[in-house]
Amino acid sequence: MKYEYQNPNQWRVLYRAALFENDSCLLVKRLSEAEEAIVDRTRQLFHEIGVDVETEREGLDDALYALNALRGTLERNTRAA
Image 1 (tube, rainbow, N blue to C red):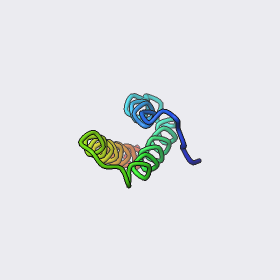
Image 2 (image 1 turned 90 degrees about the vertical axis):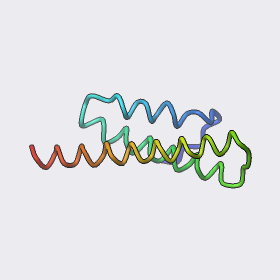
Image 3 (image 1 turned 45 degrees about the vertical axis):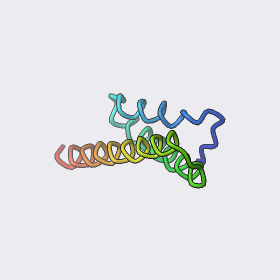
Image 4 (image 1 turned 180 degrees about the vertical axis):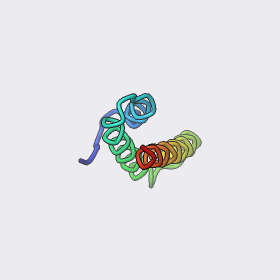
């Protein structure tokens, strides 16, 4: 599913939804949706310049790192169960 949002902050909504998802079955879906939205937004910003753009790029990188850590934790907990 490709995310082409008119709202450039939609990735933040999906990111937060993944962070605060309590259902481990839904978490996998939320992680994928958020990761895809972040990658799509990163692509949208590829040719943009400016301080605000750099700040958002840093936020996108940080969010993707956090989601990756969350996914790793979920996978370790699933294997341990």
